[in-house]
Length: 114
Length: 116
Image (cartoon, rainbow over all chains, first blue to last red; front, side, top):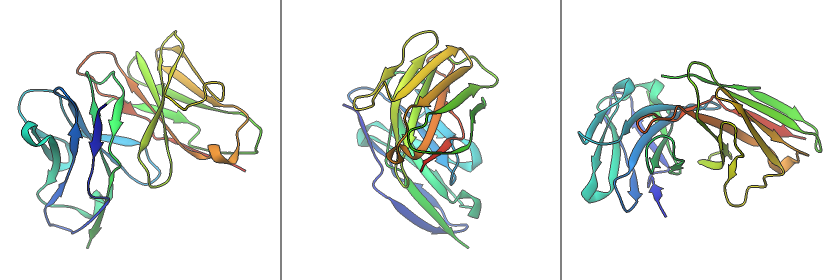
């Protein structure tokens, strides 16, 4: 069965510093990968997705992620974090496009220090 | 991106009553809608998948008679929590999928259910 691991439960960074959130997956074929962000009491907003093609994908709000098949990873990065980026971040894996159900990681809570 | 709404955003009910939560795709037709449950500080757990006009498919361990799902149209799915109890208190989130392989699931803002 497929699985998603987000090793970091909490991360704290200073505003303006760079950010990398880790995501590792387990799946026998090429997965569809997503990063979502959730603010307190809110639903999920899609930051970016990888289906195929270029392994470096750009998303909204200045985020990017790189798919590395050899490492089974899809880490999320941002060169300069803003205080408004503080939120919960979820990595998710889909098996065959958006229609199939998603498997979520446990999430990483990002705190931004001013 | 596409917009998915949920209503109500918050609901408080007494134990033993039933509560209905609506999920609507506002600007696209949703072939499939998903219902998730999220406990505090935890990830989303898929409860069920519903396709328009057919019965929902429930994940293992989810009581289908307790969590009734209806997907009567391509823009509306409802989740009814029947005979709610305090342990049903949670954050319920729906998502909608438009139906092509490159589409993404779009999530609603969630419904906070508190059962007293």
